[in-house]
Image 1 (cartoon, rainbow, N blue to C red):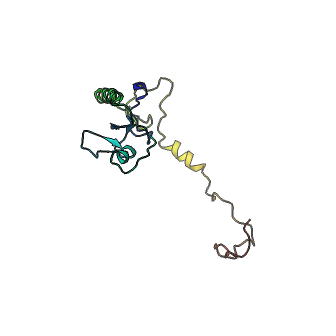
Image 2 (cartoon, rainbow, N blue to C red; image 1 turned 90 degrees about the vertical axis):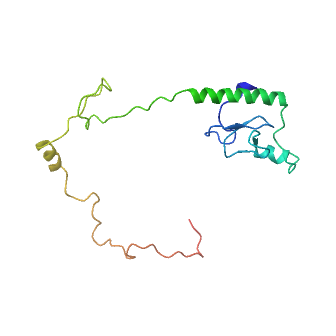
Length: 158
């Protein structure tokens, strides 16, 4: 049963687990765990309600204390291993057009030279001055002035 310890919250699958319930021995994040009996005894909300006597029927059964201790020990070992693992630094991505010196990032990609002078002017000369949308046909003016017509709530939609 200690093989299913993932380090992720049972209810929020993308959150990292911070504690393990002392009653059902499942992993939970800070949002899902409460400490009704002190800082050393975390409980999930459902088990805390059952342990406090508020609810008598709980969907998560209580696990034997021996199994809970074994799972807590495995969970703490997993958390310790995650804490000691040094995170690798994220790579810094550099745009080859904007970089000053060539850098060996990708042997296949070649840096694109920046356009200056007449090459940029030639490119700008080919851009049309016409609007992107065609003008409306003559006589097709909007009689509502761009407003939607009023809704007749007595008529069915569709």
